[in-house]
Amino acid sequence: MIQQRILFVCTGNICRSPTAEGVARALAEKQGVGHLFTFDSAGTIGYHTGEPPDRRAIAAAARRGYDLAPLRARQVTESDFFRFDHVLAMDRGHLKVLEKLCPPTHRQGLGLFLEYVGKELDDEVPDPYYGGPEGFDYVLTLVENAADQLIRRLSGEIPLG
Image (cartoon, rainbow, N blue to C red; front, side, top):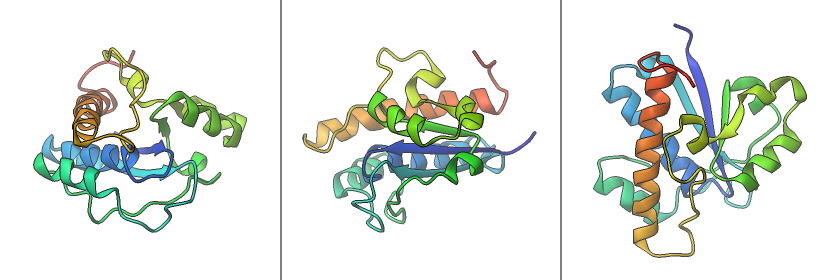
């Protein structure tokens, strides 16, 4: 099987997308398919470039056994659309930004993270930044479920679509 390269995108790359990157990487390793994937994350803005994830995202992830501390924020670039097979936005606003940046020949890899894997009541991952710790826990739960589905679908364990 060909390795799948997945980029998760949110606004500043300090809450949702690094959570998705860290969780997806850990789950793929746990499922024994880590070698089939490359995961990364980026933001639609570069305001936090070089910074670690939000301390609340790190804490929520750590409580469930995920280590986000080594990750550093970066801004999405046009070259990402050539380097990644799937560029998955956390919400519709991010998807609109990505659609404007993406060369037409690479649009097939764009989508919403939750919509791509299906089975979620919501198709957007809400931004926990301006809320309390419960928002980060909720995001983590959504991301764990979606990342598990994504990995299982792309590794061929469950059919696409």
